[in-house]
Length: 581
Image (cartoon, rainbow, N blue to C red):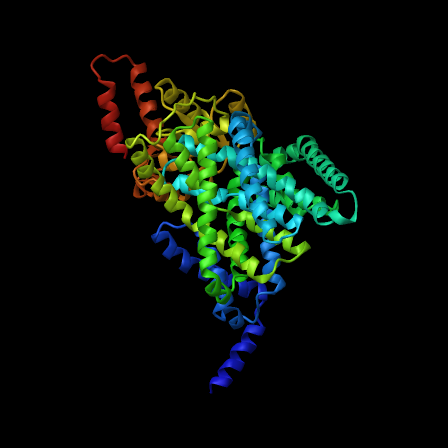
């Protein structure tokens, strides 16, 4: 009977697409494992790794008729890397680099240089070839930007000086990843020719490609995005964004450069445009899905049996990485006169290895595979150190306070920095979010600004956004019904949000997203007709009824025109509105 059931099950699985089967298993497991990790305040990325470990070591892959080496998994993982690099390009801001250049270039350069040197010499001492030692050294020097920045948001520390310092060092690491992608093929072909010449040629080719992509974006793609934005079609805009990412990434690969570099170039093309935040809000759901699959694919490579045999080395290696990197980051930031507690917080956030460490190790394995024990060591140490980041960041504050009380740590003040427009948006707090910039939105924005209230405008008219950006008004080209757009607007720390357009369906779609992120926020909305008012009131919206307000103004104006001193216009208005509903 059992054998018959297994035959029926296997025949049923054979009729299911491998892509659908893998996605189903990944999503179901990701939800279950992530719910547990969220309860313990751990990173979801670690949860995705654990999903891969479960799938690869418990026979779950057999149930869906596949195995670890199925090309479906590796192909989806490659898409995840492409989208990760695309969002990295969008988030890479030359403006922020100008304001954080000291931390990025000096702090990031010293941190990466010292860490990579120590790790590289250690790898060489253990018998690794020169190319592997260099890649491993750089992989250990990189940190998990995703885990660090998400943890800063979760702890409400986005504006902490340590967060800005971490961002500066992360920018340097992002630049380094791109350079390593460029020179890695030459590095592994080092014995076949002039290594210096090959690396110089690879860098020149990469820089030429990035310059060409920038010119294409400025004179070709940006006008295309203007035209698409004017259609107000959400579907067409999303399609254009995905096509842009895929097209430039394919062009990079066709020129014998990596897909990852092409995707980064595509993101860089639009990073300084008014559409960057809208593109981020459109692409983030796709990136999150495929990034989850990437981490699951990495988890699939982890063999629990090998880890069980090597667990002392795994724990020792993880502890050494966290301690060495943490001390180096702390020392570098203290030398740049960052306050002690902020430097400790940044050190905790950057002490781990990260997602690009895994990407580099995977790329290097494509040229010369590591032995299984070494690969398992690297993968598990990355997972363990990433999981430790939130706890290290939580411990940094009381530990820093204790050190200051013992006079073992002195605090230094840093000079205030001039913020770029994107940083101004990130630093807004207790602000008003104005959705729509028609006559009502414009009047509300001016009134609030006159009262000293910080405002942020969400608008889908590209011409209006460009004008507001030129005038210095914080503004996002974004759709208020997108949860990612609300997050980018800082909805969690805003005082109020006003939907100044009378599109009730859009307001009703956005309000639950707003309440989910900020239950105590004040929400204002407009309704044209009486039957729309109740829909908004049921959602807890303070409603401005256009017909009602127009009727009040009309009655007041009409009565006043007769100049009857025996009639109180306001009393007539109240009675008329009571009778008229």
